[in-house]
Length: 375
Image 1 (tube, rainbow, N blue to C red):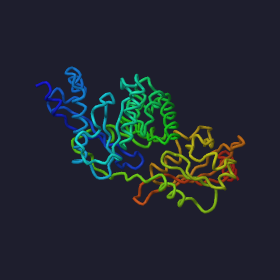
Image 2 (image 1 turned 30 degrees about the horizontal axis):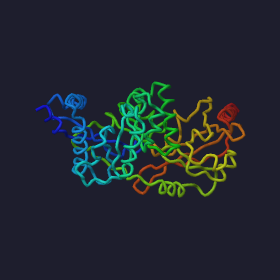
Image 3 (image 1 turned 180 degrees about the vertical axis):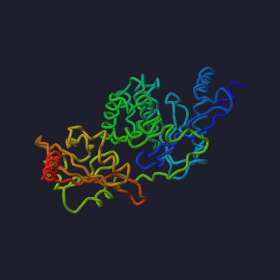
Image 4 (image 1 turned 60 degrees about the vertical axis):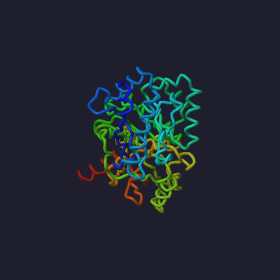
């Protein structure tokens, strides 16, 4: 009787979205016990398995349900996220051998996992999964105390920011600074970052300002027995994005192109002459780490609160502004910028191009205008 709930595991789906375009990037498979029973709550289900010492049986049932449900429910091209307990070394990643592509399956390991106390065993299990072609996500990042140690142990393809880092991020400068640091490290290591637990539009906007491009949470979509409909994000490869952004670069004038994470992909000769920064100095860096340091007329840094690049990618509309830029020599130079979003063949935003040219400061322009008005 007590084992029945473990054999009646079902799967519900929570969508993961590309924040700039609203396209579905993937679905997380979440386990539930029998509907209407106390074990419908996943925490109660896990407690029952521990009480019965049947963690391995429950783990296999959850993985079996997730893979079987993916074949039945998910659209072609979707990415599947499956929560796994790496302690259950005897449970195959796909117990029933369901025909779901390995390359579109990401196995999630929580930073709370006790196996982080045994890094060698954890790394051996991860190596076995990778040998089969699976990718790995580090879930609940920021919830535990492993931090950098967890990152080094797992070396994940994806980081999922814990809800405690995300909740209220629009109101907390400390949370913003921590997320910005995580995004910076992730960008340098080519790790995708997903924010979990987004519940307000203000949180979503702030996360995009900080360079987070993927998210899930009640604001975007609740767990449901049927996967949320929507345009599926057919992610362009890095090479395709480079080519698309290269084609969008102007034939003349200072300009650079960034992807949706604001990593600088192209930097032309005129931009190097105006800024003193060579392409090798900035290529692959996020714009806020490239040293440009755009500021408004009041001296406020624009990178995380009013970035023209972010605004153009969010709205799809061109953005023009007069800002100051930090040159390689340390001089602050006023420039006029025009930013335009860049789309792929499916109409999805894959980045932006910013053109810039020398300009008088806003104060000088205002004084000139006042002088003309008073004459």
